[in-house]
Length: 232
Image (cartoon, rainbow, N blue to C red; front, side):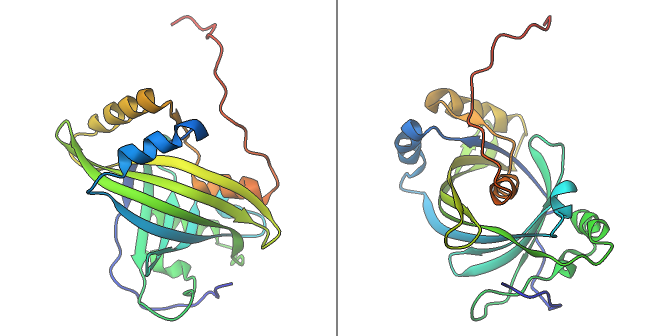
């Protein structure tokens, strides 16, 4: 497991992200894969380690702290609550290349809104520990839609908690992230894909799903809601 250590790192990146995430029914996965994996698509293997305190203070504060390998690049990322729907705080630090898995350093996020939330959650100096890991294959490309640039990212893989003989949960999801342009273009594009492939919107992050997996809480599948009794 990585140790906690202070270090100097390259420039810090984004402070917010605007995205919509959908789970993919198993029967629809092949069709979604074909739609994303056009000639312009890129494929990147991703491996991440997620951290929290023993009493899960980060999860309670709506924070997710991870080390992630993207191809040969390592980055440390902190995500926090935004509007709870499509906008989240995000602060990412690209780490210097080196042998093996890098060390975790919460101080890398100092001076940012997400970093302030992290500092408040760890005010008592609680120790951070590994909660779960993820291994996914990402197929991604950018599209232009209604004056916006949106990235499509298809993730296939699994979440793992509890070591070699621990629990597993499959990952089959697609994210639509707004990179530039009018925000209204994001839900419009996502709605077309959802209708075409039977996707279902899931506001839970990998961190939330992984925390439930580590706690031994079963992931509830999507169900079709009954007609609402509320007057429109």
